[in-house]
Length: 231
Image (tube, rainbow, N blue to C red; front, side, top):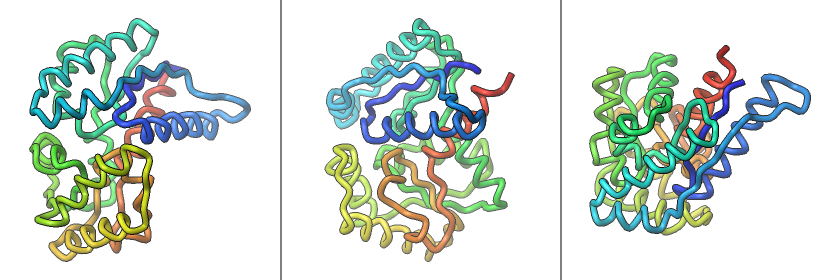
């Protein structure tokens, strides 16, 4: 079994989900009392979030590269980042960290294409929805058409992440706002909804959407499990 490296703390609620799902997945596949070989490097999200707001992505990339190199020194065979937004600097990380990296978009896209779907609605932070890096990779590498929430729906989704979900706060009233955004995207033609923030799967349920939901956290973890157990 290979050792999985995880950069977490972006924010801590989804890092806990990654840890749980990775270990559950190994246990289900191997049985007995098996668990994952895993190393975790967790950062403090507050200064990272401030750098995002200041559009200082060079700082974000530098800090994540330090953590990626720390994972290598700790014995990781490959690594992933438990956050969609900071994949904004994925190219910098891949160029700097000498360790195989699983990009969160690719396993997500593979799950969508395996269902024969083409048009997707993307929910995420405003950086993810509007920054181009996520949608462009879906479109150019995987041939998907991407829709994003508009106006108040976009504001609601972005604000929920930073004001509530990243702090471990999950409200039914916020879930209702997500349902409204999903309904709008499906009315515009979305055949599936991507939960493009790693905390969203802790709030949104399958029954909240009239079309399939693809949780990037789940897709990312499954790719990590396949890599860890691929001899």
